Length: 107
Image 1 (cartoon, helix red, strand yellow):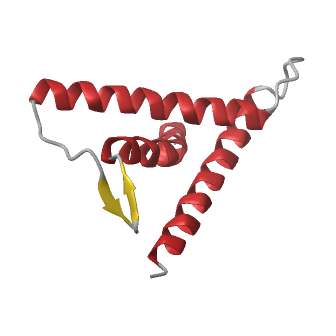
Image 2 (cartoon, helix red, strand yellow):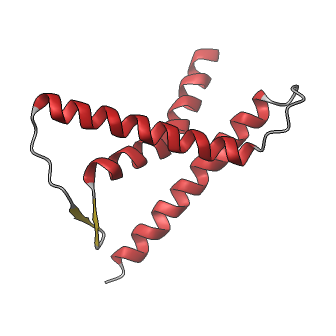
């Protein structure tokens, strides 16, 4: 019964932390520039762009492999397009993988 609430809290929390991580990244990049672009607008723009790119890639892969994917699945009490859910979930965790890769490459 409360599974939708848990899902909503986890999804919103993950989305918020992902956007904050992206904002921190853009603040570091634009610290010396004179451009006055909002870090939150850049973070949301990148989140949407990344999830859209992942979505298109997954759709092409599924179409190429001729996989049968259900139109909607029940996740935490919501009927959701599984490809869209996967693309949004991957785009939410993407900045953490970038941060991990950046730390490992610096030594």
